[in-house]
Image 1 (cartoon, rainbow, N blue to C red):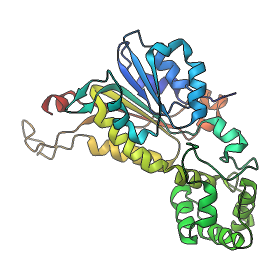
Image 2 (cartoon, one colour; image 1 turned 180 degrees about the vertical axis):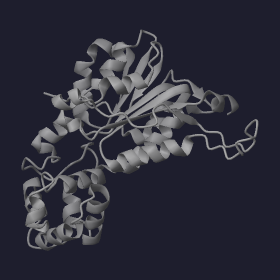
Image 3 (cartoon, rainbow, N blue to C red; image 1 turned 60 degrees about the horizontal axis):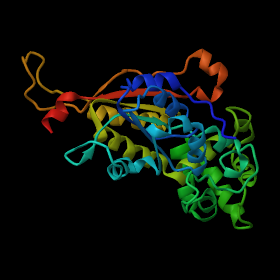
Length: 324
C-alpha cells in the first residue's frame, strides 16, 4: 500500500495558476498527491506529464490516477532529463527547439513509503540492506559508499549533505570497522554512527543517524546535482507566463532554488533616474512570492514531516520569449 501525505498540496498547485487546457509537468510524481490535484483541474484538452524514477510510484499512479488516464503521461526518468524527455514526447509545443509547457512542479521530499518500508534502506528505524536507491536500476548504493569510498570522501558528504558536525569522527569509525567486516545493513550503520558521536550530543537533536542517512541518500541519488540541472531545464521549458513551483525540505535544496531563481531575475544596473533600461539586464523570470511559503499549523498537526517544507514559485516573463 502506497500511503503518502502530500505537503503543501493546495499551495503548490495554486502557485501554478493552472489553465484547464494547459500542459503541466509533475517532476516528482511520488504518491500522486500533487498530480491528482493538477489533473482534476484539467479539461480534455489539458495534459499532465509526470516523472518518477521509482517503479513503485509509477505502478501506484497507474492505479490511483486511472480516472485521468486520458490526460496523463507517465515517464520513468530522473527529472534532470526533463528537457530531453519532453522533446521525445509527441504534442509538446517547441520554441527554437526547446519544449514549452505551462507549469512545472518539484516536490523534493522523499515519499513516505520509501522511509517507512524498511527494505528500501532509507530508514534508520528499521534494519535492512544498505541501499537508498530511488531508481532500483541505478548502480551506486549506500553499501558501496560506506564500504568502498575513502574516509575523506565519506566525511565530506556527511558534512556537506547532512551538515553533520561529527562527520570526521563518524567516517573514521566506519572505515576502522569495515576493515574487520563489511557494513551490510542500516542497523549496523546506525550503531557505527552512534559510536562516532559523543554521548552528550546523542541525547539531543533527534535521532543521531538522521543527518548521516540524509547525506548518504543525497549522495547515492545525486539529488542536489539532479535538482540543479532539472530546475535550469524547467525554466528553459516554461512557456511565456508559465510557472514553476518548488517544495524543498532542507536548507541545501532551498539555497539552490533561491540562488537559481535569483540568477534569472531581472538585474537592471541603470541609474534610477534613467527613463528606461539601457543596460540590457533583462531577466527570464519574476518571483511570485518574495519569501517562501511554509505549511500552516493545521497541516503540521496532521503531518510533522512537513515542518521543514518551503515553497518558492517563479513565473516566466512574456517579453523574453517574444525576443528569443
